[in-house]
Length: 167
Image (cartoon, rainbow, N blue to C red; front, side):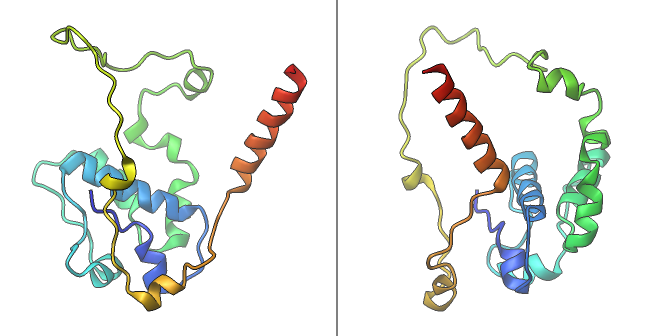
């Protein structure tokens, strides 16, 4: 998958927050559902900024609506769309309380009966990643950049405190 998920905000040179992650989710879900990138990979800047993804004929209306909300180019509108994302029809039938409590079962079994033996395989993820050549000028914008979400830091702090308490 060639995912240029960061491109929309970078190309538009706008400030961004975690709503950009939902745009990335939309791109990833589009690729998973249809097996193609939703924008023109030969002209990602123009395509991402100005074009609307085209959906295959017969694509599920609920999925298309969900993807349109995730891939909305206007960050303010996207924030409104994702504010109550759990209530979208795409997630119909999910009991969120049970899911968060770990009390739900998978909607399908991942076990295959035709497999007699499982083998452990190690994959070098860095070799599998496809990087976009931004050019030296654009790449320089990212020098020294790092981001850690406040939620992730809080979770890590809680885990550290829990580990110390158990010791």
